[in-house]
Amino acid sequence: MGCKIQLHATKNSRYGYINGQIDDLSWFALVHKEEVEFGINPFNLNTGLGRVSRLCIYKDVPMSNYTKRLIYANYKRKWDVYNGNYEKMIKALVEYLDRRYSIKLVHSQ
Image: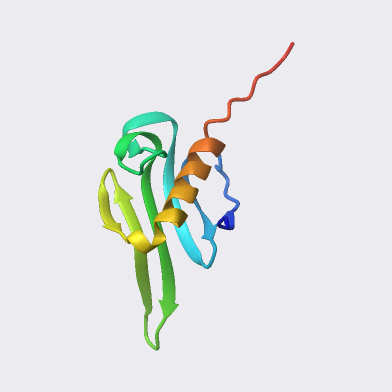
């Protein structure tokens, strides 16, 4: 069973900060044009060569006077929060972003 990944439309949806939904959770990521040495390796989720150098998967829960943010994964050049119960979801999102933003357009003449 795959995860339902959605991107939210932004002015610059090619590289930079991207956000969206994965199943019932929200996410945002910093995606680079080229692989960076501090990015998330899409094959094993360790720090290594990857295009995603910032990733947060979360859910906002409205409370009576404030909004509580539950964080399931948070990567800022290293994992600050990594909930192993969501490993398949994290891996699916990192692989999707790496694959989507590695596509190169070739112009023929």
